[in-house]
Length: 461
Ligand code: ASP
Ligand code: MG
Image (cartoon, rainbow, N blue to C red):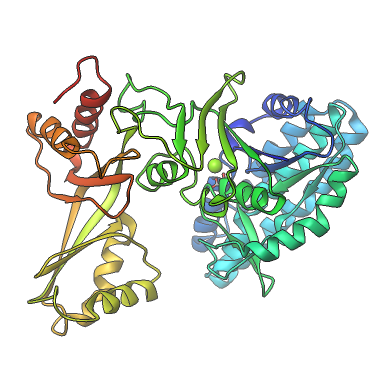
């Protein structure tokens, strides 16, 4: 069996819906499931609609009109038969109404709960699934749309960063989806969200449909997942920063996970989680050059001659330096700090500790909130907190990286030759990745220096 996931970049207008549907023309009977993202830009639109509704109700009708026009336009362009178009419009209307009502509710009360927020964001996928199933029918395929929260994609209760409860999902998919596949129906399932045991909509976070595809692949024991995007898969570096970067043919699960975690925006970082132990192959494919797989991701890795497969970056982080005499000795201090941040819903990206200082890498958006959360502990376990902004993290990734001698020296000498100061460095936490921190202004130069060293015309030593 095969799971085909269509990213928002492949779902932009009527033409791209038809093009994506045609990719499925020759799928084998009863062997394929489709997972869709929202139409390109729709989740962002819904996110900003929530923000603006919190401030005023004035923009709501405009937003609903934009949402309606965009989806109606796609239907009109992709489906010829007028009565089919009309029928489809009727199916979409309740979704627009749901968004509208929830937005007015937010405006009226001036607040939004996590579950309402996620329910609004999930409408993009619901709309896309209905339209895509109809477009498949248009090219002669028997397809039906399914909403993840109606078919039992059960999750824990972390609303924005939920984890699927795999045994329950497996049971539900076997009961609700497999029998339809046996009848030759292609299920088109919404990505990005699921439902808690209490019946609330929960999401896997932005770009979470990749993870949804993996959860469904796990449930179906699929042998492959094809993730369609509008870019060339994983690259040796971000081509926007390094124009000479190349596509990577093969990665291991862990390499793909670390690259995604440290900044490559190709795959949701948690995609491989449900697949560990299954040997499912993930094909990342580019809709603009559909003949070949751009990158294939396999369970076990292979060490390449030069070890490093890619260099990536994250310029959206800050470092909180938490100081205190002997913080490195005091039992429970990391627990105390971790709990204080978790209570404020702040994720710690990475931690580096020493005898007198704990360095917490946080998302920029959480930095100030993080200080506030830790402030009550100043004078207790903490002496002072310092915030370091305008930094960037550079990570190198490759199987065998920790055991190959001389590799770190090559990375750092490449950076040093460009007179870039390395402020922090962390290795050993993962077998396939390490990272260092530089000033934000040096980020581009540092990525290019490392990339040139390992992938440039002349090898560096
Ligand atoms: N539509 C959601 C987002 O834009 C999920 C996804 O695209 O995977 O984040
Ligand atoms: Mg997306």
